[in-house]
Length: 288
Image (cartoon, rainbow, N blue to C red; front, side, top):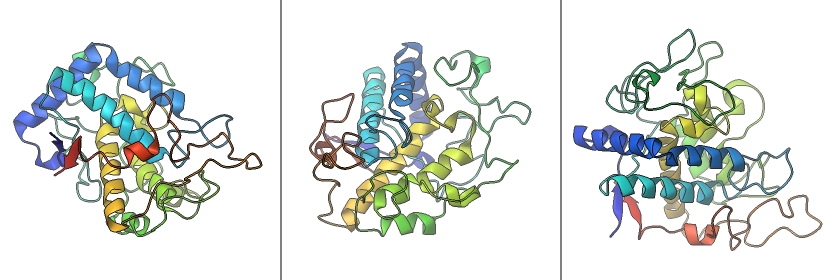
């Protein structure tokens, strides 16, 4: 039977408590840091060699859908009634409302070093030590809105422009693709400031701290953000009936993207699942 992912702003106190407890237990067991390591490994950019599966590629959506499912399965081994809530950043935009409450994810980092001092993931509780990252900082950091160079959360209008595109993705299938739903939502742009980061990417930038770069999984909000991104893919599919994951076939030998992206029926590493298999997971979960 399919379970439900809820808007984080609608969770009851008990649901918040159970979600936090399951996250902390997965961390205590050492499983959580494996997720951090995996995301760092598969955070491959255009400028690097090899296959891109998690970012700057068509498989951005199905890869993170499978990634979310793996975390959710770990949580449900702790508490079978827990699922990952989603954070709708077009509506829940306050800095002290869900998910940033003291009983959920805690709030912003302090001004001096961006260390998160509130909530169950604050380092003072010694239950959320950063062990895998690009620096040696052991405490969780955030820098809401980047005050030194302000950036804003995406608006519903900006999101709407991505959802309106009827094509899943387009050549060259990377961060420079100017058309297609995938990159309009993943959010690689041009220029500086807000224009350089759209939708998904700008949310990472807005939260700041550990949410920047491949080690962003260290901040639990990563999962709530990507649950909403997953929901947006579902909404796009319903808006554009019949639209499918692209490319359907791998780029040919003469293409610069040959061997660098995952086609519809190719397996996504490190799993043995294809984008085609991840296009419909209604039998597993649904959104409230």
